[in-house]
Length: 112
Image (spheres, rainbow, N blue to C red):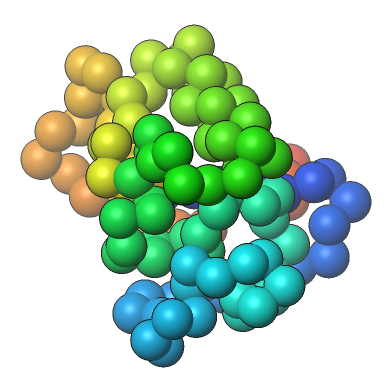
């Protein structure tokens, strides 16, 4: 599963995309494509060494945000892929041969 953290009251940002235009995903947060997520040191789906979860080159704020994401998901049984701060897999995998692709939002939890 790929995800990041956004404040509850955040206005929706642009849909993340990949690949990012050259250099647009790993500069300072104000130089990256805007979104509503917490600063994780790189944009979501930024395939750069700076995106490695334990990268020592990110700011203290980004480190704290990454640690929060990893810690919260680990408590629920998700393991982080060390080369992508946003990528997690549930252990043990409940559906190891099934792939899911759908948006998740607060509204999806209350509809239906």
